[in-house]
Image (cartoon, rainbow, N blue to C red):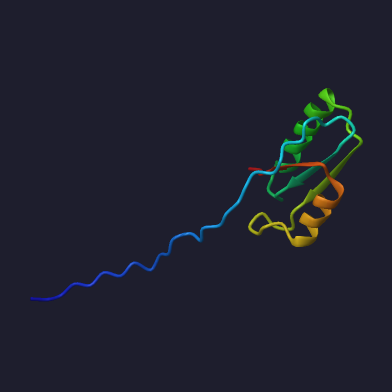
Length: 95
């Protein structure tokens, strides 16, 4: 009798505790951050989001950034800049 041994090289995801950020009660007078992931049309989608938000709220400013690569997470300098400058951030993917 031949013994057949099957190996599974996959691993499960690392579990991490996380929580949603507190909701901003209103956007009037706030700074909005827009983060595009670098894919085609992400910037166009965020422009439409910006126009929709600006038609409903009086924003103090809008900060627009694009990740260096769609395949990588935003670098710490990008996240720190958004966290330091913005009251709320919208991110979008393209394609």
